[in-house]
Image (cartoon, rainbow, N blue to C red; front, side):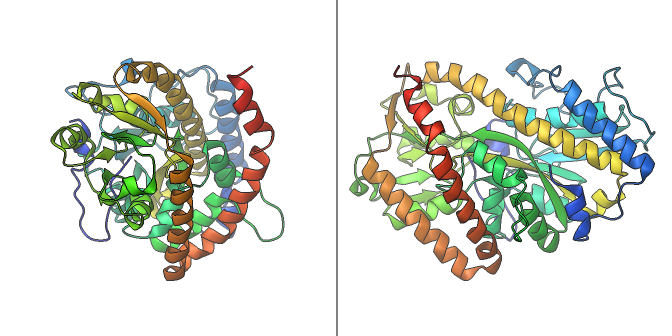
Amino acid sequence: MTQEASSGPTDGDAVDSILDEVDSSSLARRGFIKGGLGVAGFAAASSILAACGDDAEEAPAPTATDAPDAAETTTTAAPEPTDTVAVTAQGPELEWEMATSWPTALVTLFGSAQYFAQRVGELTGGRFVINARPAGEIVGGLEVLQTVRDLGVEMGHTASYYYVGISPVQQFGTAVPFGLNQRQQNAWLYGTFDNEGRRSGIDMLNEFYAEEHGIIVFPGGATGCQMGGWFTQELNTVDDLNGLKMRIPGLAGRVLENLGGEQVTLAGGEILQAIQTGAIDGAEFVGPTDDLILGLDQFQGDLYYYHPGWWEPGTAVEIQISLERWNELPPEYQAAIQCAATDANMRTMATYDVFNQADLQRIKQFAQIREFPPELMAAFKAETENVLDTVAADDENFARILGPWREFRDGIAEWHGLAERSFLSQQTQV
């Protein structure tokens, strides 16, 4: 789905060229946020959270027709106050800019940022306006985290693993190869754990983000399990990976290279031309809907569309906010952000599930659908564990999260391997 940012200057135009419940109390206890909810603040925040639940069924999911034309304005301001939301305390009038990593053409991901901004406006009676800006309008798509960190913009909407060049810990916020599917990722991020010292994933990530970047993050969108990519040749054995040039992100690229392939960094908008000219043998992006936006249905030749995307089994995107700016917000606005982020996370996944099933039918007309053979999947899995161990040996922060993350992954895999797996395997066979 991405290129990764390095610790130095990055190509901010890389993404532009694609096409033209964190628990506040737990954060407060660790000193991440200042103060607590007073009586009035608590009442306002409670009404906001209640409104979030009540109004959630009425708000439409983003569709292709909702996306603004690139030639038109790209600002997504909050709407006027509505009768469906009751705010019990007047907050200050604020207007924030939100840099994103997405072009407007990606109605899924940029649509997620727009929906989040809309919900914050609704939950604050129109007094807190957030303008969602596409990649390149404020900063390049791979420069969002750095710009939020340096107070160049109030907030961002991006994928954390774009920044593994800054720290490999960033991989956990988006997706880890052979990691968690979307339900499992949400359980890890939001889940309430026992009293034996274990914390939720978002707690661990926000502790790292606060210390490393001075920011706080909230899950704000999800793609589900992604596809395994487009190839001009069939892949049957590990030997077929030798010399294979593939656009693939992050730590998964290390896995490919260790198995004889070559990781290629390439902007999404360049994939079609690179495949046509033979510059690459394969490329991954997201799934049917987003992949069709790249124009891969225009390729003249044999294309194989593989699954699953083992490096992104449950991809999440983040809303990132400077802690300095976060601490300046009244509690009810903080509650509105958390509520809107959770809502956007759910709605984005639903949007992908609606769009992808339809667009898969289009892809079946020009590409051959293939599943990675067991031999390849076994090799990918074994090498993934080796790469994770190697990174953990060199990075203390990564190792600190990897241990409990692995424990959670293995436990929930066993649980989902029972009823969930049994039902899914039978769903289309009985």
